[in-house]
Length: 419
Ligand SMILES: *Cc1c(COP(=O)(O)O)cnc(C)c1O
Image (tube, helix red, strand yellow):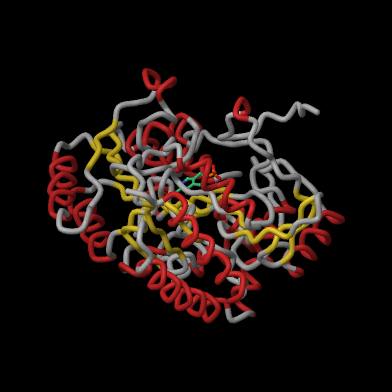
């Protein structure tokens, strides 16, 4: 039986099994063949509290019966208004303006266009983006351009725009990053620096400390280069705080949020902007307005889901849950660090990662698909980045389920971790 569905990041020619999921609850998925699968990667980093959180489900249902969709250019609705007000309240201040879109990639596109519009409307056009090595910012052309180049982008390479890349601040080499950033900022043509705060996700769960984030922000501020925080993955508690930037006391000029914005239930994104960015587009001249939109911008149902997510954050002990999960992950990681064949244990808040000591480390490392299949056989959704295994579960995951995850990773080290 062949399906007409063409899946993302999937080589159909390998004919790997594609599980059919019929329902989800808490941290568990249920498949058509009756299996219970532990969702150890939050369904690709989106599910924060749990699958099918009752308050979020109820909000979606109620909104769907009231107002499903409305054009957002020149029109508005209460869920979008209230959500924007509440996001401004909880975000680093002052990020007073909220632009809606549909995914992390579009939030990044919007951020890049806002930065370019800022400089263009001030009459000092600047076009150079500074980026960090190993970064990931999405799969649209702007996102690919500011992200790490590699096998993912090879076919499109000639069409990606030029950027200046600074090295990832590896432990002991942080000064090189700061020096490279200072040099790039001093050139005078840099519009913005875009960065994943505290942890580079798709690049391999690479972690750097808050004081480096603060230092990078200070360098950009000193030279008037806009600072774009891509919190698409790090937002909504993953790093231990609501937003990663909080840990460095950094207020970015522009901040991108998506993934956990609706608790992971439905797609929605926002790009938050500081007053100077908004003011640069504010005039009587229509040619200076912000030229970006998509059909479903600020869809009311999805905004209602995001409002319910904010209610969960307000009414439930989410930060306590996160602290408990982070402590369990610390323990689990300590156990894994002792297992032969596992290297570079690391943690950022609720997320842990560890590398298999198998020779090939690239994303297309042969061990990747083998590991995925190995974990699936054991009832786990884990999707290693090459030889890098990470655990990023919903905050509701039980101690027992977490234990099963660690056990399987240790077992995988025995099966695949040969140096
Ligand atoms: C996932 C991710 C994106 C892209 O988000 P999509 O919703 O998949 O388009 C952008 N930036 C970062 C840091 C991400 O982790």
